[in-house]
Length: 571
Image (cartoon, rainbow, N blue to C red; front, top):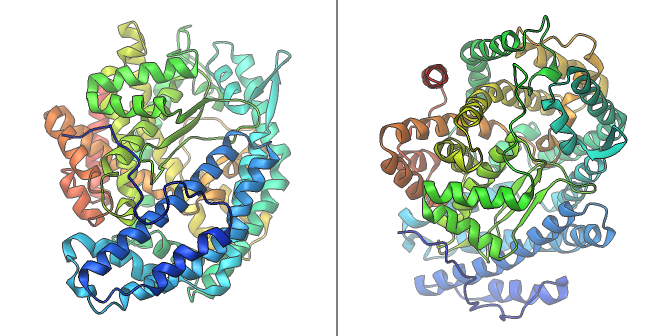
């Protein structure tokens, strides 16, 4: 039914050889759209298609600039190319985008458009009109440049172990060592290296908070949180729902987290479970080692996806043929991992920092789920139709983590390691919730109190951290490192308030997995059918097509946690 053989569509508005170099070359295409008559339905729909083509070309150019820069943060030419777009092109696009939005809404034949097809698109257009302020253009440009500095600062972080230099991602493998002294040494070196740039990251974050607060004030909002909820299109839940989620995590998830860590402590037979003990295997077992190189990780992921659904594997093969992967960690590469949709080409780009560890497999299948989403929605007529809510996007990725477990024998050649890998994944499903709640609650405080000092921020972070802290891990003597632990979360710097989605979507992913356990083919069909809708339906409607309820109430969380707990007990 679905095909990975996607192609960049023929251009009908822009020349086939058009490349974005400067504003002078780009502006005439916006003027064409501004001057065009859209007084009948046929003309209006063609105008929308032409505008969509222009958006796709611009978006893809901007994405490539960011991809290239994050792959090599030390390359000044790539940095300058990204900054040029942010400072010289994007600010000139925004007034035209607003004018085109207003032209669309004012069209005398707007009501002739199919409401089933255009409802969410027009809702998003009206939201953009409401938020747009000319005085915010320069602020947004400055923010775009500053946000990327996080990757430059953290991408340069290295430590030395036994005389050899490692990125922090590469050094993580030592935390799986059976040598407890080595684990402690490396843990402290990693934390100390982060601590060395504490002031630099504090200063960067202060600038971002100030700009974000001013942005929201200019748009008539009480704070940046309220502005950002609107900007992110959170039409289907409120800040109060987020607060209920925080409380539900404390009530229904933390007891399971304590159970997991208590079991870990007993298995390791240690008097105190320390942070550097969390990744090691008990009884002298070697750490899981699912692959050696990025190429091997990709090849094994393709085989894993092939066994799950051949279409999924074909998507990764298509990306490989287009050289749309950068998987291995190295100096000068930005941290983290992402799947970057490429709106015109269709096949996205996956970026990550693999170092041969189990969590790299999780990252790969996670980003692979995002990639499948890009493929499934590429056929949609307008670029705006492909802008799906993040709460469904993360279901695509997190459900793929759980679906793919049945085929992780591609990474492990014995049942013992395969069982350990699945246990590791299910533990992660549970233990990630408190961190999601911490980061989200911290952001609410940040932007409700934008004039705070770094010292006040540290106190607020520490208080929230303790609210969700388990009862098992001993953090004594590590207070200084804990105080700036928030600085490792790139979302706080680069994509503010994009984090609660992981919690909401994890619940959706668990729901998808429940379906999968009952009827594998029906669950995969529901998954693909929902993702293929892109952003053309509301969030509750997308969840319904996926066979889910859009519900992250305390009672729903309680039920899903009971299911995962039972699954863990069966392994």
